[in-house]
Image 1 (cartoon, rainbow, N blue to C red):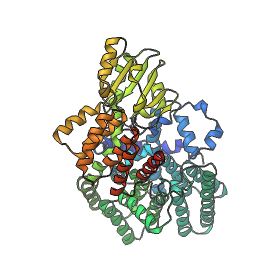
Image 2 (image 1 turned 45 degrees about the horizontal axis):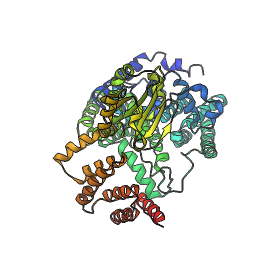
Image 3 (image 1 turned 90 degrees about the vertical axis):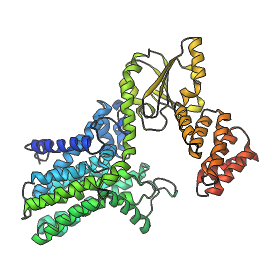
Image 4 (image 1 turned 120 degrees about the vertical axis):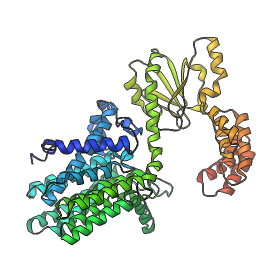
Length: 581
């Protein structure tokens, strides 16, 4: 078992590692997202694991919902939040290396380099790869442990000791995330069908033990109150679980359609037909497809938690069947030409990934915001002093670094700063920053104000050190609190529609400028002409804030008349009724 180590994975495989990294770089730089900056966080979760390791005991980790993943990420995160992202990249490369080794053991032959290249471009250029591999890093780590278990099964003569090692890696996978729990069971069921004699006996043992480990893992998660398995009876909850077959099928089909397209299906069909003709690896191909598709089932029971980039969890397993072609006696030049044509069409046509890249650009928007914020940091650092009261405004609609991460400030500034970040939602005092609602701040209290736009670009800098500068800040209050108001006003000059009036009304409502809020919201109600409920709903919010409860009630009733499926409208209606009584 000494060889089943990191040293074994790397030994003699530098060529594969180089090929993997080159394809990884080329796919990101020239296909999607179009640039290469892999340690730039595109989601706040990727920063939040950067925390004080000393603050967590082993018991804290044990009672966390994903104990192994939490522990590993916290350990790696002792260095910096960037180390979390680097760790995700390393695990991804190791996962692909493990897939190569598994197929080498399944087929008994080395994998053709050109087939590796096709496989790598297929998975790295998948529209959900870039979004998911570091964001859903728990699944990436869980896949690693699962693949190690499979490699041990294929590489070694199985005995009781080896079976225990395999069960250990199965447990590590399940305690990282349950994504591949069913896939693990499916894998060993296939081994029962494929193998005979002693190895079949251990396959039966590992099937049973994997089922028991999955059950025990779910029970443990239930006991500690994990939201991921504490099935909510609330049908509006993101963790509402539905075993309705129609709902399950629809959600499964959603993930399947995102994971494969016409060209991927064409490749799988080509591989399957050739395997049937040559009577080689038929069960193995079906097995890899089955264990890949099984990874979608845990997500399919959550109809309210349909997340686009979760389609990636099956992609490397499903696409990997292409690798068996190395060991099927065929005309390699003809097959490689067909695969190349399919790959090119997959990148360039609407039946392939072309439209999906556009659809997924929303997910990298926060990353570009972060990139712009980083550019401003030197200026910010040069213009603050110890004990300054600093206000950050304008970053209200993204997962940007300032807004979400309490550790980013610690990592960036080596002086004590009283930093407040405005937002339009919750208020929270963290270790390094204060999150304050935009309606509850007095900008005159701050002596340094940095105003960003929603793209993360620093637009204005204000100093409040004397009466003259204070007057300027008072005069520019609206532009400071909502720098995008000017942009919306310019857009309104070109297109005076209900939506822009609604957005302006909401923003003035947030800063309690009721006169301007009412002016724009009334226009929004008029221009919506009863076709959209939100202008009426926010007029209700405005009148409720002003204490005009009877008028607020009438607007909430108007909103419900247009849309009677929104619980927020009914909650607001009942709240105002109680106030009137």
